[in-house]
Amino acid sequence: MTFVRNPIALYCTLLWVGFVCAISFLEAWLKFRAPGVTLPIGLGIGRLVFGALNKVELLFAAAVVIDLLRTRTPVRQWALIVLPVVLLLLQTVWLLPVMDARAELVIQNGPAPASHMHIVYVVFEVLKVGALALFGIHSFVPTHATTPIAPMPVRPGR
Image 1 (cartoon, rainbow, N blue to C red):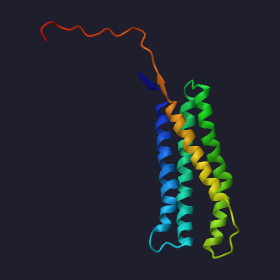
Image 2: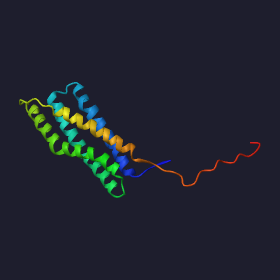
Image 3: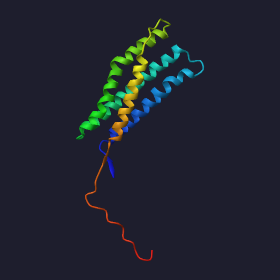
Image 4: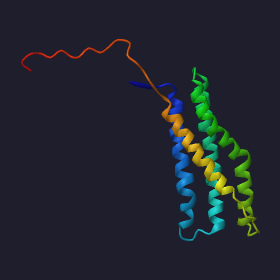
């Protein structure tokens, strides 16, 4: 038998993974395949969507951390959640502003210097999803029965 020590943290983690996978690994490139979506329009949509995703991720991260703080959470669980939270904070304060500034140059038809920031972003997302998945897996705690379960008696003739 297993139980979940921090169910709120687990639910938020699973939702967090779902949001990141749906937006970063599906919507991000799919929008550019839609008819009539030019690079400036796609970048404008991307800025809005990823700005919203970032805010939702910050809420999920806060909920996870608060849920972990209210119980005696093992160090292993804290270690597994540190990476996604740090990556999210780096995206918030460094990566997204840099990518937004470059996108704005393209939207305004200005010259945009070559950049590898999208690759960095994708690497961050893959690492974040992997760490969140491990956190989710390790949220299940096995329990051991203190008394053995006796087999059900069998009635003769049945």
